[in-house]
Structure formats: C-alpha cells, structure tokens
Length: 488
Image (tube, rainbow, N blue to C red; front, side, top):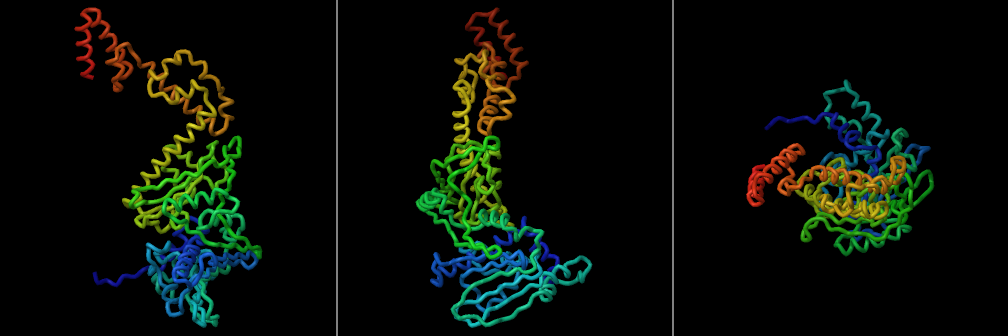
C-alpha cells in the first residue's frame, strides 16, 4: 500500500485522558520511567542502588507536581527525539517496565503545562521540553481545525530550550504546572494511599514479616526490586513504603485484630521456566480485611501493581475470599506482557497458564480459610456434615434427628462475623444437599447409585422392583432388577 496515511489529532486524547483508568496513574507512569532510568544508572555504575532516589513534590498552593530521579538522564543529543516522539521507545522489554513510549503523555490532560527537564553526566547543559497542555486542549476541541494531523498539533504545542547545568548532574524531572485540583492529584491522603499500593516500594520497617517475605522470595530465585521514594507535600518530606503491617483488622462485623503466623511461598509455573513467585500470609482468616490498601492478592511486574486489589478475585471460585487474604504475585516471565493500561496482561498462552496456576493457589487458600472457620464456628456434628460426600458418610449422626441444625437462629446468624456466617452457610447448603440425597434413597442399590434418575423415576422403579421380588425367586429377581437398572 503506497497511501501516505495521516494520524488524526484526536489520537492524542486516547493516548492521554483515555488511556488510564485514573488520573493518579500518571504517577505510576512517570515513576515507572524513573526506576528504569535508575536501573540503567546502577548497571552502568553511575549510581549505587542504596543512594538512588525518586522525589515526588506536590505544592497545592502553586498547583504543581514534580517527579525527579537521579538516574542516567538523557543526553541533549537524544532528548528531543526521545521526549517528543510518540510510541517510538527504544527500551528493551526484558529490562524495562515501560517500553511502548506513550507513558510520558499521561499528565497532559491534567495540567496547563507539562515539562521534561533532563541532563546526562558530563554535559554542561540541561534540556527542557515543554508541552503547552492548555493550548493542546483548545486544539482538540471538536470543530477546531479538524483536518490537523497529530504532527501539526505536536508542532504547535511543543517547545524546546536549553539552560546551563553542572557537568556532574544526571537526572530526569517531570513538572506539571497548573494542575487541576478536581482530580485529587494533589490530595495528600489519596496520593499517599495510591503510591503505597502501586509503585515499587520497600516494605515498611514496622512490618517485621517483610524480611521473611524477602528472604523466602530470594530462596525461590527472585529478588524484589525496591526503590527509595520520597514524598514532599507542601514542604513536609517522608519516605514512602508499602502499607503492610503485622496486625490486620478483619471481619466487617466484629473488626478483629488478626496476626500473621507465617509466610507461604508458591512458585507458579514450570520450575525450569517459572511464571511468577507468590507470597501470602497465613493468618486466622477471620473474614474480609478492612483496610482496602492491603486486602487481596496483588499482581506486580517489576514490583509495580498490575490492576488493583480486586484483579485476582476472578481466580477464586467465590470472589469474596480474595478479600480475606494479603499477598503478592511477582511476575518473572517475560512472556507475560502488561497491556497499555496496566490493568491486566495481554491474553496469550503465558497469561492463561498463569491464570490456571493462580486458580489452584486460590483453591488451596479457600480450603485453608474454610477449615479455620469450621473449627472456630461449627460443632463436631456440623463439621462432619460439611465434610461429608454422601448420605452414608453421616448415617451415624442420625440425620432424621437434626436438632443441632437449629443451634443458630436467624438473628444470630445475620449478626455473626464473616467466618461464622461462612461456616454456617456452608453447613446449611451441605445439609440441604444431604437431606436431598436422603429423600432420593430407596432400598435398591441399583437405583441409588444412578444419579441421573429423577425422584419420580426412582419411585416408579422401586414399585416395579417390589412387584418383581414378590413374583420371582431372589436370584431371578436380582437378575431382572440389574437388567432393568442397566437400561437407565
């Protein structure tokens, strides 16, 4: 095809406001680029990992945001090409978290001006590339120069300048000016909660089990990438950590303090070519975890969150049980590719294999938490019924006399905690099934073992077999019964 096609200017809307599920995702995109730059600097010996840092500065009075790292930076020769080109990243997908070359546009829809300021070691100048986001919004109003291409718009809103800088400096900084307060981008609590969950942070020093997670993950062959991130909000500086702590508050009704007893590690996939390494905390599993910042298994790639705390719910047979668990799944196979929105993965063979592996782990966790709920909440008779497979397994309990089935009245049940409610519901469901089996029982084994028969069919066959037994010898009757039963 020789047609010289044109990329329309409205593509920019899809690559900015339309690309991400939340305005806060711009922090993730810029920090993702920052950690890639730090990794490059560490590999080249420019920076020691412990001295690397990412600084996020928010000034609500000036309506400004800055995200700065002390990684390699970009030399002035390449700065304009790398920062203005769209979808033309030269990053290696195996080494970098970001590789599509569109993440740097994430802030365009939420400010009046977006600037990239950078320099590389040994250069006496810094390069400043500025996108006039306010002008961009005007150019993207429908009916305004609709024939303009994306190239025309970029040419109209992008400017470049250079300024003196120390030759020892090396950094990359993103600056958003004229930030809208409507998107909560400068709200301290909202921002901190977002950062603690989404970006590649170390565990908090107060989370003593964090060291156990790190050491066990190390033994499984994976090193968790962590970065020093500092948040300055209106002049107040603090280092940011993951939100996990040793005490977890669980159960929506009782709000019980729960303790971690151990850390479980699972390697997902083939040992020779693993897909991911997972950790989760063994607790008392009292119920739904109250703090949404820690509840749920989280999938992370390069220690950056993929999706949110509900992404793994789909892998549990009963989705709510994901909310009873804390843990993380670290992706280590390059065949798993995060989609552009980073809310899931490209649907390929590696993803489907990962899904199957997580489902198996979810089933084991569900079995574990249910057992704990039963042990706390149910009598021995009730536990026997929950664990029963057929009516024969509970015959010794005299199923006809189920007084113990009424130990919990409706009011008590509705006001019980998550664990007790779950255990009682399971008991009632299994009891209903067992009693249904009892209702279907006849004195003829040939009928009872055929699960396809309806209750009416069982009654008819039972009457027929009664008549056969009355008219024929035991041996002949049994032969007739087996022949008839086999036809069904």
